[in-house]
Amino acid sequence: MIKAMQLHISPSLRHVTVLPAKGVKEFIKVKVGSKRLSYRMVFYCLLFLTFLLRFVFVLTAIDTIDGERKCSTLGCLGKRIGPRILGKRLESTVPEVIYQVLEEPSEQIDTQTRPESPQTLEEFIAEMKNGRPDAKTFAVKLKAMVTQLEERTRTAKIQEYLYRHVASSSIPKQLHCLALKLAHEHSTNSNARLQLPSPALVPALVDNSYFHFVLASDNILAASVVASSLVQNFNRPEKIVLHIITDRKTYSPMHAWFSLHPLTPAIIEVKGLHHFDWFTKGKVPVMEAMEKDQKARSQFRGGSSAIVANKTEKPKIIAAKLQALSPKYNSLMNHIRIHLPELFPSLDKVVFLDDDIVVQTDLSPLWNIDMNGKVNGAVETCRGEDKYVMSKRFKSYLNFSHPLIAKHFDPSECAWAYGMNIFDLEAWRKTNISRTYYYWLQQNLMSDLSLWQLGTLPPGLIAFHGHVHPIGPFWHMLGLGYQDNTTIAEAKTAGVIHFNGRAKPWLDIAFPQLRPLWTKYVNFSDKLIKSCHIRAS
Image 1 (cartoon, rainbow, N blue to C red):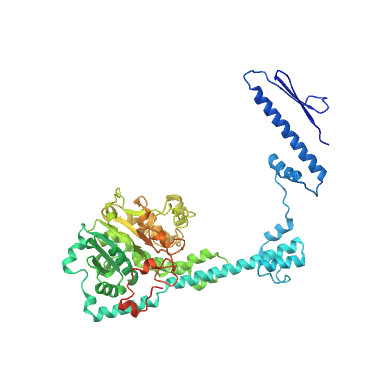
Image 2 (cartoon, helix red, strand yellow):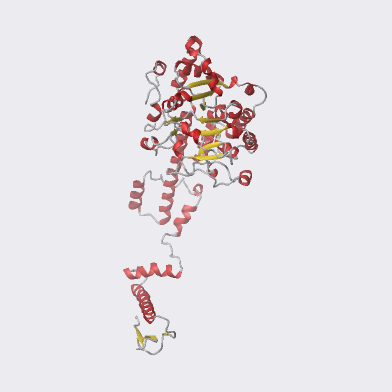
């Protein structure tokens, strides 16, 4: 039974008394002694308290009348609100046996006696409705179905990573064809062997009044797109000097391409690494590190068949190991930028370009950026609207579970991007950046390649630590080779777009909606391009 309550207020408002219905005993008594208090406020507070107490009593009484099995609207509300007010947890309505089955290791479940698992959610629901099983059988079937789907998903994901690894690591036959035809042109066509640049323009190669760009690549078609997009969008192309560095095997085809396809009035230089005296004499630390890295990588990682056959590792780990086998990680072209001060001893400043970028604006304003004494002008990759691409910090690349990394670096420090970088070579020569780079390569080899993720950016983050000047994100948009969230309209707003990732624009796995941004700089009417069946799509 619910007991009513009475509220008595003295005429002077100096006493307020709350009594039970029978008035036998005083329940609450408040004496207001100070005239400074608001009598009206005291009155409203006590009136609210009175109604709150009555509400709780009503909920309790209704819940008791309803009994344990029934639950009225007010009763349910009391059950939900009451325990939260009192700081108690509600008891779960899920049978404990379901948790027990779900928490058991999968191999402990008897797969011999259990019938075949449902293949879809619809089949599972139909089977449960028809069989009306107990809670344990329900949990066993549910877990079996989910486990089976997880195994199939894992297998499919690994196969996807394997196929993408093969597609991204192989040289497309069209590019191979182009290299062979250009090598033939170099040996049989005198126009393909013209000196680059012409003797009259050689002094410009060391003239700091020009805008000097450096491109290191063994991909002829990719290099041609970078060069064409740079020159076509430059306000003063006659002031461009583009230094193209390649390896020995690609030198003749690369030279033949730019000899047969001059980008006048820009000045193009093509050199092989074997043309640099300092590179052919004595020991080159980065080459020694690469040789050791290749041996350690083959022992530590294993082949693609062994990697894919692993049944315990997560798909992302397998993907990382497959990526380790990519030829680009063993390519000297990927490491050559650390030697820029030695490669160009007469130059004060250069802009380094990767071969998977497209220039969409005039890059001459980069020379007006005040570097404040820093060596590397780069776009930071921890700030931006695209959280998937522009959310990279040191912890995204370096292994902070390793004490050597945790001791020297801050995991929350903002990372930056390779691909379009301003390098102040004059300031660089006053630092120990190159020695730091070699030192950490050695440390990584001694740690079984466990200090960072693959690639040249992680050791670059370390070597240039404290020597980076952030530049605006307009100058470098990333991610066009590993995610397709970027639209063409968004990409057109950037000065330089970067197809970093596996889906390079010259591969069949490129994102079709983004590929036209790259193919617009390929002359598909060129006889060599046509003869090798290189097409826009």
